[in-house]
Length: 242
Image 1: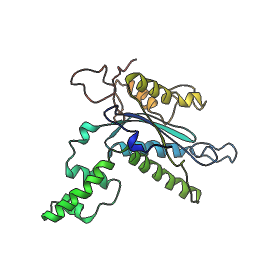
Image 2: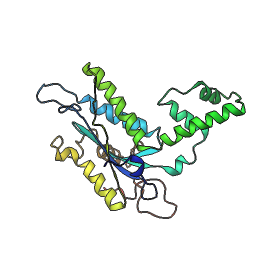
Image 3: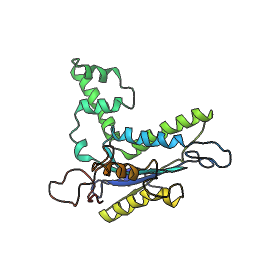
Image 4: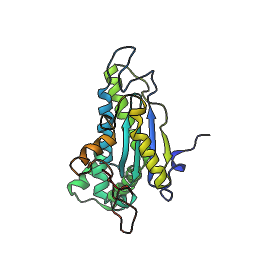
């Protein structure tokens, strides 16, 4: 029996999770369709842009990603420490970037005085928003639904674009994390859509390589911060090599 997502996510065990979502239709709907000749390559950019946009809203950081022809991979880091510091204003502001906020929330943001009942109602609603903004399932929902709407509009059709559920895997230690990130990074090469990591478009490894040329790290990705230590800053427990 399939387990609910809530039982598969445990921050006590690990903040790192590998998620995969696959197109439900015939083939190559995120790349080039060899049978019809249609080029859907631009949809890979849709997915990359949406991943990065959502990472700026949710309490989730992107450790790695790769957008393939009919599926994508993303390795997520749940930032519980930052999440716990979010104020009521922060939660409303973030939620409003994804969904239309009710007038009560907008009044609060404008600085209007709310009575006790209104404030309690707002806290009740934003508590739900808060929990969703750290939820991997909600992140994947906001990602997949957005891409499906764009693809269906372009194809002038309706129906499912992605398989019913994304797959997720907890990465329980540094060895599992490193192996998974390498697996994600090498996907385009294994699929013969790129010959080198530098040529692997729509991947996190390409962004990291390009930034490394100037001795920087991509702002849209979780940085490498070296070996785990006391007072370690947020980031991947690996050293950035040359």
